[in-house]
Length: 169
Ligand code: SF4
Ligand code: SF4
Image (cartoon, rainbow, N blue to C red):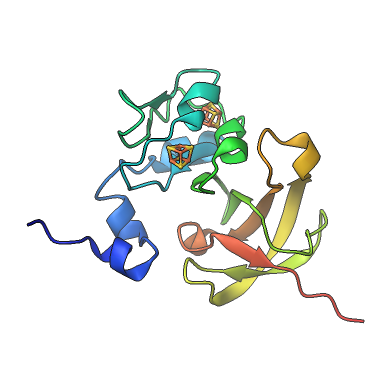
């Protein structure tokens, strides 16, 4: 019997585990513009990301296969991030010494554009502060979840996968 992968036992996947399963976008591609990266390592019958992609960048021969993105075909439209019911698609864009991460945001309250937020890693631990660049409300997305883009220190590009809004007063 094959061993259960650590990410299934732990309930989250590390960047090292992720990039042992799918290719990592090159630094050149990450600096060119936002690129979508699926963090969906389980073979489940699901394919809305492949269906909605306007450029055919997401390959998945059958709905049970893992989504693999051709990063050169990805135009960074974010539709896969919007539609994914598993909240498993993210976009990453390197800009100078920052990274812009586009992610689904299910926690209330919804942050506002320009707001400073607490950056959370894959386990939900705070790892720093970042600035919200854009907010797309639920009613304007293809799915049922708002999506936000947050600017983070570049060294946290593959760690930050959620944010928390902390407002005083
Ligand atoms: S961001 Fe747009 S072009 Fe890129 S993989 Fe997702 S749906 Fe396709
Ligand atoms: S829509 Fe989301 S959960 Fe479904 S296959 Fe695509 S990445 Fe995975």
